[in-house]
Amino acid sequence: MSSHESILRSHKRRTVANSGAYLIPHLRPGLKLLDVGCGPGIITVDFANYVAGSAITGLDPAILAHARTHAGAAALSTANVELAAGLITI
Image (cartoon, rainbow, N blue to C red):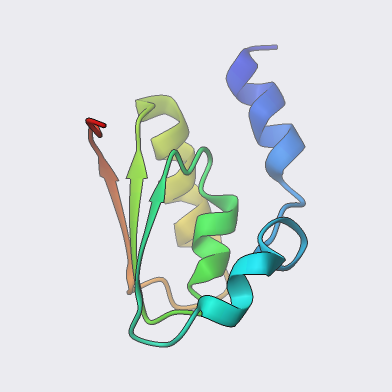
């Protein structure tokens, strides 16, 4: 099993409610959200339930491909979710 498979397996049950509940009071429709290091995009796609605009930056093409697959399979509108690969300089 690759490390990607183990990461995906460990993230499948994660949601904004169980992994980012502390953020919910700050989320508003129209908010622009940048999820740096989104991994497989499971939580990031769930953010679409809370905000009208989301930007997702993935740094691993294999994981980003899974995030795109997950976004397409989600039973909600992901028109406001952008999946992009890039680098962040701090």
